[in-house]
Image (cartoon, rainbow, N blue to C red; front, side, top):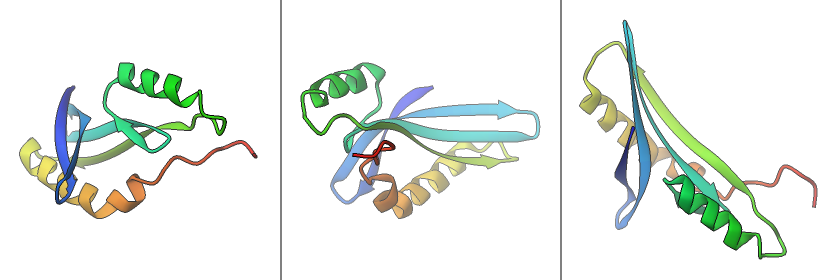
Length: 105
């Protein structure tokens, strides 16, 4: 696992975690990050800090983990990264939505 920076729109980028899973016959490349009330972070420490700061807000804290992944029978992780990058750009409006509360207000 490693951190990587992704440009999701012109002039807008952020860091996320990249995980490679190589198995016999199938490989997976996954990107994930944390979201606290609409603020993305790739580290658990920063996420916990964001949660602590947001806990002071009377509305409360809504946090989630966001993940996107691609799989392939090939070992070409660079091609998988390019595909994942393109898909994240297309899906970004949905992925960037603020997490929704699961409990009624």
